[in-house]
Image 1: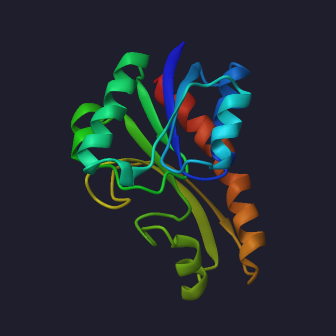
Image 2: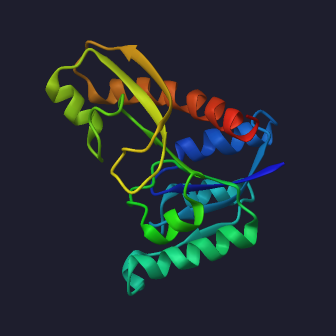
Length: 187
């Protein structure tokens, strides 16, 4: 079984989709570590329910990003992690993690990159009036949502209800992330 870590900052719905697929044998992987930068986030409860080891930290308790990233790298190494999946992790990955795990960190983003990078992609796309939305999975590099694209899936939407659009995006991103992880683990 290939070993995965999932990084998340919020409710953990993508984490749930990934860990459930792993438990069902769909991906050929096993989630062995969940990293969260928001103590009290719902994803911590989800990880506990699945028996996944967690590292929850408050960035302000560290002197620098490099300090908490060194701790994360230590934990990733100790767990034998081969692939890191960002799933709603709202921090920019820094040099320490990139040096240790470059080429082995992937992210899911709620737009068809390179359009609408950053944390407010859905709102930006709606404001722009796009009619084709989508999801991108890409490798993480030093740029903001600029790493090499691995997979994309598009769908049409002509409404103006952001909650409905977010639900459509989730319906696309959960299976796309699982399919992509499976391909990455078994090339």
